[in-house]
Image 1: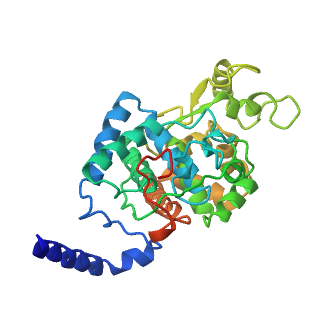
Image 2: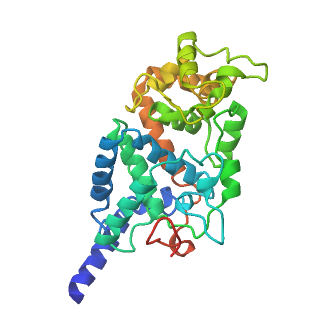
Image 3: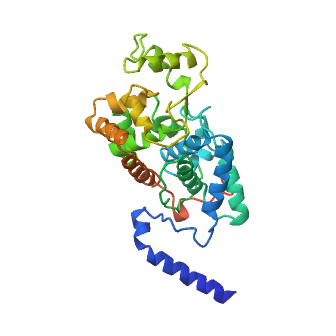
Length: 330
């Protein structure tokens, strides 16, 4: 057994040396991390997701959103998954997350299966990153190598969750500023917004555009009229806060570039979608048009931006822990 362990150690070292660029490119993270410690990780994540998304296609967007909302608050550290305790408030209860984040039970199921097969090996933060990627793939979107090695935080940040996550009624300047704060540029902003090609939004997040866009009791003039009428039937002036509408009305469960085409036709659902085109920023406007014309270009940039987002302030080595249960610290 000892000699076998030694052989595995040398093989592991050789593998690491064969990918010397990965770790530095990915800020201390590298895609091959679990090659020997938990080779089944990708298979387990994918098998749980296949079932969950087959049962509820909307789950793909929900899981991708979990990764996004996690990374924008103190980095990609799975702080979003922590339930409140005596030491801190949960990010789940912050304004952008309360009553709208979903998919926690799917992450729990993945974690439980991984703990059975390779205990105390795969972090919840890495599970979020893998689930985000595989949700996109299962919806028909691009595949990318996910850099791995994040550790889980021992605390959450309710205050930052209320401040750092872009609101659905954000202006273009507000969006650019929040993304810059995370080290992400305009290309990342437009490409990652394209994640809205799948998923739903609640009436409360787009009501302002229908009834009082500029504080003058008038709708947003950029909304296409038929689309606007349909939205009013879903979202009344009061009540129905949790009524939902697809972010991409044409292909709500398929990851494609239709989201950008809809923006050009005045059928973007959220203000934060629409301003990419109408917010008087030449760069974002041009990117919307480019991605509407060229799906392969969008897929390429989306994958690149997801890798970049997944590297926001990760906890590595001894800075965090690997939680046994994603909802609480060890």
